[in-house]
Image (cartoon, rainbow, N blue to C red; front, side, top):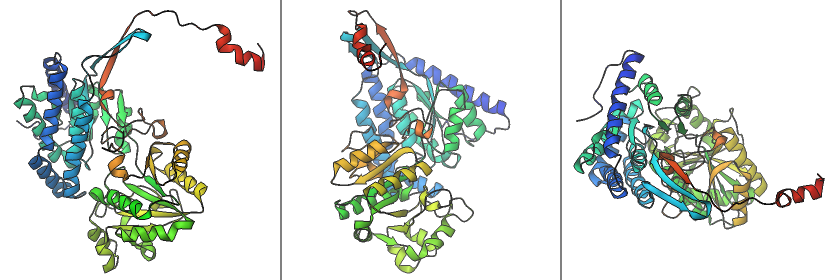
Length: 475
C-alpha cells in the first residue's frame, strides 16, 4: 500500500500526529532489522538500489518527473537514476557497517558501528527519485529507518519511488516501514514536524530548507549552494575541455548544483577557447545579453518557465534568433561579479557566463570572487596540463572539491574515474554553513562505539614538546 495517500492537515497538531505515526512505525521496523548481519544489510541496500536501477523503473520515473515537474530532460534523468544508484551501491558494498568495523591494537581501540536512528531525508524537486533512493541506501546501510520529505512539487514521483523501495524490501522479507514518505499534500508544517521528531535530518535542496534543518533542534546535515566556476588554462586541450564542459552543462538541462555556471579564460587563449566552445555546440550571445537577462530574471528571480529547459525552448523564450535554437548551450560574456551582476550566480539553465582573465593570477582571483559571491565551499574546476596550477587553485580557494580535467557534473558527486564517494548531496564545510565537508556517504549514518583498553604509556618528555619553543622564546 502506498504511504503517500492524501491526508488533510489543518493544524500543527495534525502534522505532529501524522509524523508521530510514521516515526513509531519506523522505530518498529528498525527493531525488526536490529539484529541483521552485514550480509542481510547489504541485501537490503541492494534491494533499494534495484528498485530504481531496474530499467523500466528508471525510465518510467524519469518520464514522470519531466512531465509533472517540467525540469530537466528524460534521458539525463534516466542516467541519473541508474548511474548514481549503481555508483552508490558500489561504494556501500565495499564498507562494513555492522559490528566491529575497525581494530587498532597499537592504540588499544576497537570500533563498533551502530545506527543513528530514524532519519528524515529532505529531497529536492530536481532529483525526485535518485535522491530519495540515494539517501535511503545510505541510511539502511547503517541499519536505520528513513522517512522522505519530498519537495511538494515532486511528492507524486517521490511517493511512487518510495512505493517501489517498500515493495522491494517486502519481496526479500524485510519490513516496508524501513522506508516511508510524508503523505500528500506535503507542506512546511509536516516537514518541520518531521525534522523535530527524528534522530537525524539530512537535507538536500534550497538554502531555506537547509537553514530550517539546522534550526530544527535535531542533529542535521545540510548542503551548500552550487555556482561552479571552471578555468580553461593556457596549454589545456581546448577541444577536450570544451566537450567536457558542454556534456556537463547540458546534462539534465543544468539542474545539477555541480553544473558549470561560469568559465574563466586567460586573455592569451580567450578567442581560441571561445572557438572551441562554439565547435562543441555553444552559441555566443554577445549581442543578446540583455535579452537573456530580462527573460531569465523577469522580476529579479529566476524564471520558472526558462530554468532547466531545452535549448530551443530557452532560445525561443529569451527572444534569440533562429540560429540559436540549434545550439546546445549559450555563452554570455561578463566582467562583473556580485548582487548587481546576475550572470555571476547560479542560473539553473543552459547559460554559461564567460570571464576573460588577464593572466593565471587573475583567473584564480575571478574564481575566488565568484565563489565568495555565491557557492563558497561547494566546488570549482580547472582544465589544464599544469598540475602546479591545479594545486595552487586548490590551496588558495575555499572549495571542498577542485576537479581537474573532468566534466564537473559527472565527477563532483563521485565518478568511476575519481575517488569521491557517489552522492547527490555535497557538503561544503563551514564556508557554506554546513556540518560536513565531504560528499554525503555512509559514515554520516552510523554512530561509533569505541572500546578503549590501556596501552604502554605514550607520554613524551617535556623537552620534546616545549624544547624548540623554549630555545626560541625562553621559558
